[in-house]
Amino acid sequence: MRRRDFIAGLGGAVAWPLVARAQGGQRVRRIALFPYAAENDLEAQDYVSAFRESLAKLGWIDGQNIRIDIRWQSGEAGPMQADVVGVLSLSPDVIVCGGSQATTELRRRTNTIPIVFVNVAEPLAAGVQNLAHPGGNVTGFTGLESTVGGKWVELLKEIAPRVDNLLVIFNPQNPVPILMPAIETAARSFGMQLTAARVNTAGEIEHAIGAFEGKPNVGMIGLAGFLPAHRELIIALAAKYRLPAVYGTTVYVRSGGLMSYGSDWVDQYRQAASYVDRIFNGAQPGDLPVQQPTKYELRINLKTAKALGLEFPWFLQQRADEVIE
Image (cartoon, rainbow, N blue to C red; front, side, top):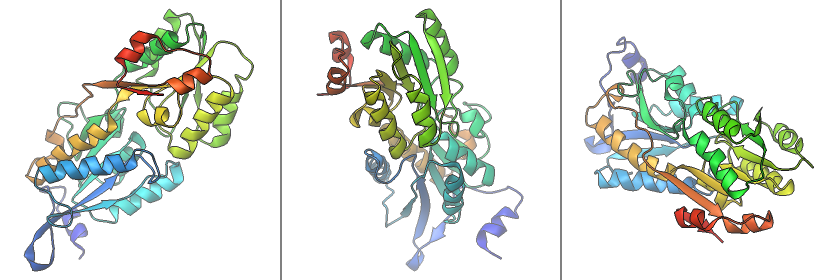
């Protein structure tokens, strides 16, 4: 009988963490790292480095007492399922997973392997019972909280006061309905006409953004949920149709987007290491509270603003955590 089959046969009475043995009897823990990124993403290696360094500070050294297997995400529904199967085939002692889609798919397929997620918008949809006491085998760090949607609308009006048509695009594979009420409320307060577009393929993205060609005073919010190929397309289309846009993650601004406001994803991978350490020391994932962001970062791209004929107010430049010139 395979070891994993034997454990499953215990009827769920599993003691975390599971322990593999290297040659010579050394106890080696196996971690599957499944970031919400493709390997060629601008910040992908930052996620990995932050996670490794934080583990090392806690005494967990890759190649000595742990083994880290990295699997990158495709960002598409069909391939994602195959990616998840590949992660589970590693028989890891713990999985560190980025994004709502992958976390939900992993939780659907295993209720025994501990899962520590990062940048998940809706943990309850990913199998968490409640934030204080998640229960089961899933816990982690949320990427956003509901009120941030209103902040995106406010930032857009500050850089482009004439905007009165608002396009919100999001990937239906990573739904974020918790953000929409705040976006809708803020849009109404500014007298904006709101259009929400569920887009996944390149064609759907082009159609949604292209529908505003020639229309005046249009702005856009690009929610998280797109890997590099689609992000680059979104930024290019925003430039083509001269749409001021605010995004939820830093990588958009570093790729040429106008502005981003969101939590620090790199720091979430650092924090995830602390939860892995606690699980390896006997904690149950379901007893570790889901943590929400305590800090949001504003990043702006002055070069993109100039190309759009916009100028960031000085107070925004002073508040920004990063200014790209």
